[in-house]
Amino acid sequence: MRLTVAVLPGDGIGPEVIAQATRVLHLITDACGHHVETTHYPIGGAALRRHGVALPASTAAGCAASDAVLLGAVGDPSFDHLSPEHRPEAALLSLRGTLGGFANLRPARTDPALIDATPYRRERVAGADLLLVRELLGGLYYGSPRGGNADEAYNTLRYTRDELARVARVAFEQARQRRRLVTSIDKANVLETSRLWRSTVNDVAVNCHTARLPREAALVERAMHHVLDSGVRPADLAMPGQRASTTSEVGDAVCHALAEVIDHQHAYHAV
View 1 (cartoon, rainbow, N blue to C red):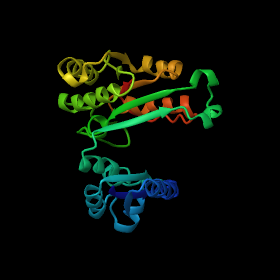
View 2 (cartoon, rainbow, N blue to C red):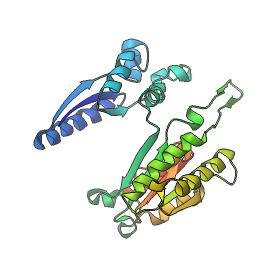
View 3 (cartoon, rainbow, N blue to C red):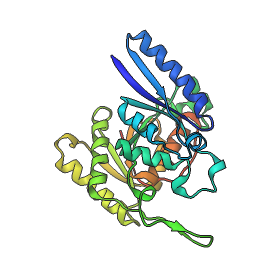
View 4 (cartoon, helix red, strand yellow):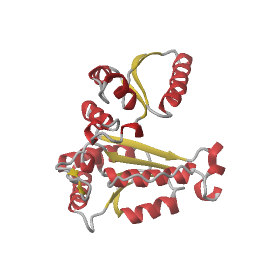
């Protein structure tokens, strides 16, 4: 097998991590008789320093022409003074759109070698296996209008049924290969977008012949408790963007004591 991989080291610890990841990639493919051709491209702060833009056209074109993209960390506080559309992180949003990456699979599993690093008792987390399916191309990160000044700021949380349905299908397909249960995580008691999310997931489960699997819905607070209390149970979670980051990072805490709560809002938990 011959594969082309666009390598984007990015910023901060990204180049260090990606250098070792690329080394491992070549060791594995060589051992298995495959050939991987890697080409490096700048992104984020590194690209801003070299080209004046966070996502150069050559980087976007290289990624689109490759079989896969290996991406490091993106972000540099040196550019915090720039407007959002010009910061390093804007490259991630643009690249997702360019590649059509609407769903993010975020597994959290217990590694036996690291099990004693978790803050939880060994018997509570042994065998933990979570998969979160996160929506990536809608919601607060892409909604408009957005803006602000020194006294106020605003963002728009907006989803369409089609955006949510395609992510729901991914969650159900993943669950089909695992424990055959999808937990849809939302904030349907408060948000209209979450009520659309829950309704869409139910419709996909009923009407899509490939998605006839058990499913349940959970408010994000209950889902967080579920992850913390029952991380040992293999499961798949599905959610829109903001809740997914939060819940998946807690899943990391269960498995590897690496909790880092960010700010996302909906997700699918596939069991």
